[in-house]
Amino acid sequence: MREGGMEHSQESEFIAYEEVLTTFNPSDKAILKSILDAEGIAYFLQGEHAATYVYHAIPVRLMVRKDQVDLAKEILKDFNIKSTFSGLSHLADNNE
Image 1 (cartoon, rainbow, N blue to C red):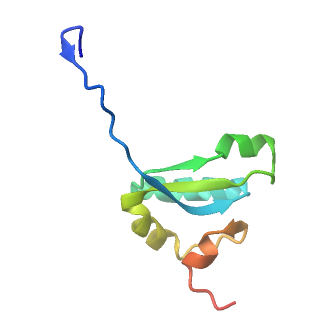
Image 2 (image 1 turned 90 degrees about the vertical axis):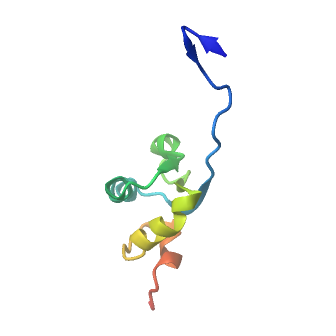
């Protein structure tokens, strides 16, 4: 398609994301964002805004670009966020 003297492609690139962990705690979200932003990991928090309005009813899911999942897990494995209900507990090798 040609518009305004420039050509635009109608095709968009599909990028797959994978769930890495879930949490109900707003503090976890802030920490995760800070860590992943600093490392340049592509992610989004599914349910982030809805969870604010329905506290502890909707989990926030950390979705990481599929080709960066292993790196994200490696970065997060040493973080023991107790308020997460799934995810980090299986990333870290804790003998609790």
